[in-house]
Image 1: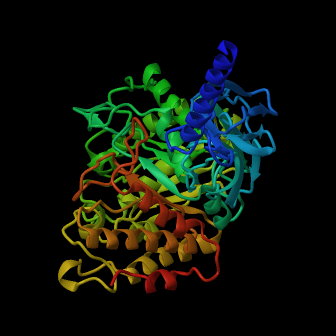
Image 2: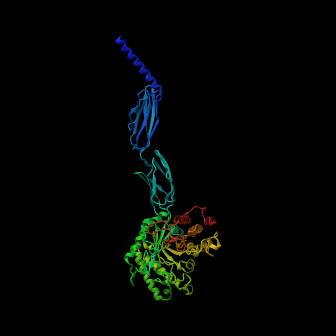
Image 3: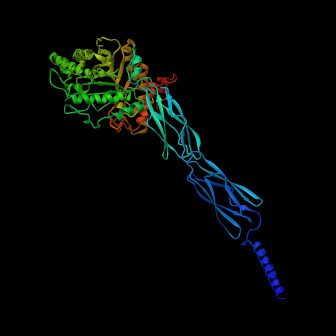
Length: 594
């Protein structure tokens, strides 16, 4: 009986235990009940990797495996309710492509897959590292493949425009840039793409174009085309104080290579470098130029040469208002004075020419600047029977003879010879072209600042046929431009004699409407200059203000653009370089501000 009681006790205990398990299985808080379930069918990891949790509710212990070594599975625990937990760990992705792994999950008859994706490591690939562009410029497409938030830098302003695309996975992008026309020597620019520590550089080599380093041609129009669009380094080497030339005397800091590089990058093709020599010249009869000063002039000429620009140097304020040694008023009244001036002129140009005689034809010598007796063309020259005009013609001949005698490249160098006060009317009426040993190498130099009320003084704020008569000068509209340039064309260009406008421009305004007329004026003058064969040189004195005498486009030391310089240069380039037949002086006229 004792054994039977023991068996019965065990039997009832078993029944009780069975009842307890069933009750627990039917309870939400109890063990597993129903079909196997997994917490996710997709897992995504960043390129840095990491660990995520995968949970599986199952009555049977699951088996979880990965088909990729970089994706690891580790069992963590199981709850009494039948939930199995696994750590899924992805290693850092150092590849440049996204990658995937598959987790296989089995539990009894149940099976499922979990897709694991991971973004790539930093990727930055350009399809082509160098491009060649024609001088005319145009669109440039750069194909870039990346998977990050990249950036780019362009080292020159003649390469522009593109949108920064934001990449996610490794994706190919076509970026659209624009290369501006090259009017100078061959040039190279770069676009550098950056993604974190990765860089890719694309180089763009653009062939040389019209204008730029090398004055050339046998006809006035060919020579004008080689000069292109000019610019003056004003109030710099021509500055002086108390009779001594000093580069910083008029507010500008010493100029640098950076400026000339920026000039070339902006589309300027020629520079005029006015030079005042006062205080740096010895006594008669040698009139020796100080070596340090001549070296500084040579250094600045070198800046132009390095940047691929044509350059003009001259003797500038030594004849200002007949106050200094180039005194045309006294020379016209006294032949002894005239002979002394000619002796010094010959001595100085002999020295200057010898220093530069090995330089190529990118360099032009200009005899003098705005020679007059203090009356700006309305002084004694009107009543002395033409004596001053005759003296200036003599001086120009002395200049030509002195330069040619130095040999080397100076035997055929292009030379600029000015008319009286560089006034168009007085030049047309009184200028005599010097005799020369070579043909078509002398260029007549004039200036154009009509009307001065609008261009220089800013007392008039509007100009041209659409300007308000109450806000503009009473003279000097578009017809004056055509008339004056037409005189130069008839007197010189049509006769095969080249000429150029050594100074022109218009001061900056701080009023949007007035500035629109300034832009119109500059485009009209430049287009007219192109049509009449007269390459223009904009006067830049480095001033960043607005109003009278504020014609700065560039900081002469750093090359930084001032005010709306880019806009100003663009309208002048349009006038000089546009070859589209639909672009005419009339079309510019029709586009005047309203």
